[in-house]
Structure formats: C-alpha cells, structure tokens
Amino acid sequence: MNNNIKGLIFIMIGMLFIITQDILIKYTIFDASLMQILVFRAIVGSLLLMTYLFITKQPILINSNYPFVAIFRGLSFFFGFTLFFISLSEISLAEATSLFFVSPFFITIFSYFILKIKVGINRIFSICVGFLGTLLIIKPEFNNLNIYMLFPIVAASTYSLSMVLAKKTSDSDNLFQQTFHIYFGAFVGGFLTSITIHFSDINLSIFSILNNPWIINDYKLVGIMILISIMGSAGIFFLISAYRFGTPVVLAPFEYIYLVFAITLGYFIFDEFPDFYSIIGLFLIVISGIYIVFRENKRDELVVSETTLRS
Image 1: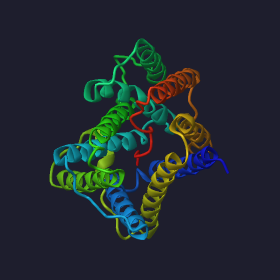
Image 2: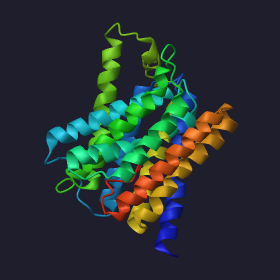
Image 3: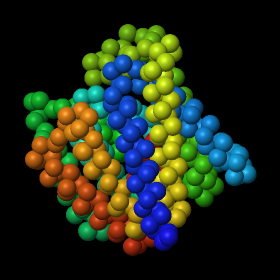
Image 4: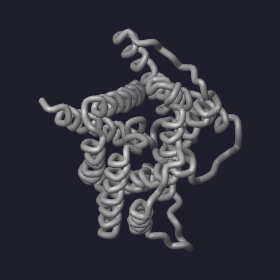
C-alpha cells in the first residue's frame, strides 16, 4: 500500500478519535468537571505515551533545554483549550471547530515574528479571506456580541503560538518531550484552576461551567472521562503516525475532514446545523487554510500539522 494512502487512512482514524473525544466532552460538560476531564486526559495520555516509549525502547525524557518556553507552552495550550471546551457548552460543535481552524493564519503570523519566515502577499490575502470567513460565522453585533464565539479563536491563537514555539525548540526537545510538556501543563493547570475556584468566590457567568465539582463516585461519568482520555491520546498517536508515513503537503488538507464529521455528527447527536452564512464562512476558512498549507509546504516552511498536538 502506498505510504500516502496509509497516512490518509491514519488521518481519518485519528480524526474519528478526536471528534469522538470532543462529542463526549460536549455531552458531559454540564454534568462533569471540565478540569477533572483535562487532568484525567493528561494522566492517561502520559501513561500511554510512556508505555509506547517503553515498548519501543526509546528513552522517556520529560526535561527541556528551554524550561521557561516549555512551561509557557504547556500552560498557554491548557488555557486555550479550556476556552475551546467551554465554548462547546454554548455554541455548536461545527461553529467552534470552524473558528478553531483559523489556526493556520495565526501560525503564519507567529512564524513571521518568531521564526522570521517571510510572509508574501498571497498569504496575506489568504489571511484576509479566512478573517472574512470568521466574521461570517461570528456575525458580530457590537451591542450583542456572543463572547463564546471568541473562545475558539483564542484557542487557535494559543495553539498556534505553542506549535511555533515547538518548532523553535525542536533543535533540542523532541516530539515526545514536547508532548509531555503539553500533558504536564494540563495536569498542573487543571489542578490549580480547580483549587482556585474551590477556595475563592470567583463566579463569572461566562466561566460558570468550571464550577462543577470533581466526581469520583459516579462510575458512568468517570468511565466516560477515561474514554475521553483514551480517545484523545489515540487521536494524537494516529495523527503523528500519519505524518511519519505520508507527505505533509498531501495529507494536511485532509485534516479538514474533521469539519465534515463535526457538522454531520453535530446534526444527528445535538440537532445542530450551521446557518447559511456560517457555511459560507466555513468554506472560506477551509479554502484559505488549505492554500496556506500548500504554500508553506511548497516553500518547506510548514511549521506543524494543524492538529498533530491538538489534544
């Protein structure tokens, strides 16, 4: 079988795991603690990664030659995806996902300032098209702005910054070390956030979903949390494997299959479907994002696959 075909199959499997994770989080977010979910996912992900490294006889390294950058990456990644999952409690899965897929534009911008990669007129035009698509989804009304629509965009920006910094530090920190740093950030961030909320009077309505207590005696919910952790970790494994088999320029555009899954499953499970303007916006984001991916690969400047370390 052709390596790119293998990679494509792995992309499809990986995205199925990731969409399953996100659907389960959206399904349980009103009953379970989001922080507990993220901490569980970090623990399970770390254990599975260590098991994989042990079986393949690779060293288990969690240190970094860029400790401050590693800490910043881990915590900013945690912060961004906390906002993304909070948004799932108020907006549709398709809308949240579409807005998150503006990440190639942030990667381009951060690459210019951090990696000193030149940004030509074609990519600037693509960023403008993607921004137009974002506006069509958000449909901003300054007297009635849906703040939850902004959360996936913040998540996309922190994710993109994390990926660019991963590229910046890749000369000494390997992929597995960087993955451990993401898990460690979620573990520490989840515990600190839970403790802060428990011992303070913070009760902002937009973050009220974080007030849910940790649950250890509801075996159904705990089982779902463990399943979420396994789905997310498996998704990462298959996406990383896909890019080890195939060529990024061929495989990267197929990551947008996640949007198809999000729209389809969101409709059948949550009775959600984007309106006409959101569909047009989604289309513009996908087209401009794919163009940037091809452009970056063509110039051998692709920073990282959009979702390789997403979870």
